[in-house]
Length: 203
Image 1 (cartoon, helix red, strand yellow):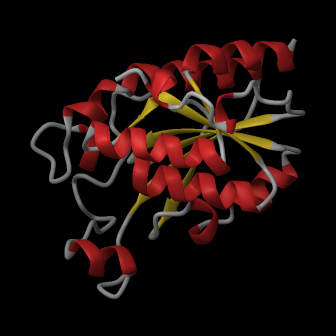
Image 2: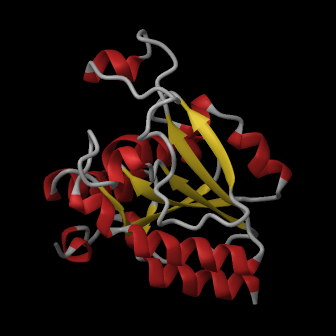
């Protein structure tokens, strides 16, 4: 899928303004999505693990904040549970982050909604760290990643969305989400260019 070709002309393909300080948001890279035979597994999710790890390692080396989220079901009445008619309790064998990802000093945030800002205290943590921009990677592109990107945008952060570091169930949903975000919410960028930008900011 040539996402750059598909997104030609949209504002999110511009080069991002240089941020003061970036944070990395690793969204829901859990066994539930990434391990074969898990309830929501897709090879697409497993395939982005090396890209996500590369971002984690680069942010860690630069001394910039890394946050990793874990989705869980807090109640049968959660909107996500009611929509999908399925639960993921904290006690599930599928709840934890996939063991192939080495998170280093990442801050783990548990959330019961698609959006990270609406279901955790990440906004306060980012502001305390002096961050004005976030990089989003993980799964699923069109659900938790997209919702988090929209929330971050509305809270005033510049949003960099990793096109090759996010995944969902189909090319249609992937490109549709990238296009929507590029139109009104986020800079769509690949992991190598994110790392280049981080090097420019970090010096």
